[in-house]
Length: 233
Ligand code: SF4
Image (tube, helix red, strand yellow):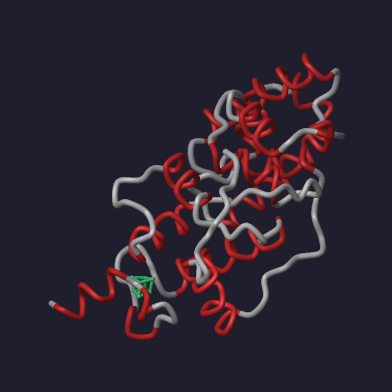
């Protein structure tokens, strides 16, 4: 989806970023991995704690001499290597199927060819692969060395955005990505999008938690619809 031009003099995402930067500090990261490694990590990390996903990723790296082996890897062996992540067996199947499709089209399981593609074309192509949703696709494009201009919407970004009131309550990941992309200030680049993701994720993990948001100590209290409703009640 093409990011839109924002004509707002004081865009809501800019205000959110300013408030969160004051608390969490800058989230820009100079070290990026190649898109193939990022894709594999994103594929196995869904609905799983980061430390569990990281350990599973390392085990998978030890199983294979290189990513070139993944398309022909044994699905049970891959599932065993990533056994601690949620839905390991299904993720192993999707991962190998996706790796085979990528190799069939581009001679190797290697996503570096996407560097020459537009963000929209690359995201559209990736989301047609088995098990690849908008989060995996955009993470591959924005978090990796590709540094493409897309906003990764994970469970924390989705939840906090709904509570703040910038996404509808029923928005899924696709609607969340589309809705938030429309709010991105035109002058923001890929690094800005990377930063707002990690700022909002930090907020979701530490303050705007799933079960009990700590609005009383939240830096976004003054611009949040949920906090306003809670204060009224
Ligand atoms: S004010 Fe409360 S509901 Fe709103 S973002 Fe902060 S913690 Fe979440």
